[in-house]
Length: 132
Image 1 (cartoon, rainbow, N blue to C red):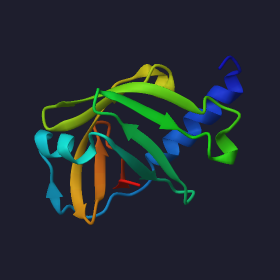
Image 2: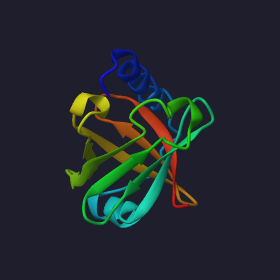
Image 3: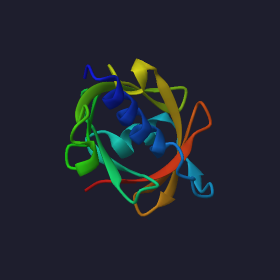
């Protein structure tokens, strides 16, 4: 992605995920519970635009983000593979170019019915659904 405007727009779309408010705490998950919940699953992050952004957490530690099905994002880096792992009872991930390659970690709370809320280590928060 060589166009600076495209990079900015992708970052804006991904940053919008951080603006979604999380729900009230129900059951904060520890590392083993987080891993059991998301390994091999697709997590659909809720956005303020009413779009659920899918992230596929493979069991081999690769996370695949794919926004190619979102028409507004097709002109940007629509798909990227990053790494995910569990550290200090948090879900951590790092992308090659999304978020400028910065590592983030998330505290995960179960809201029941395969719904979660997350709080990122920089204070951003939101909600998501686990599974297809």
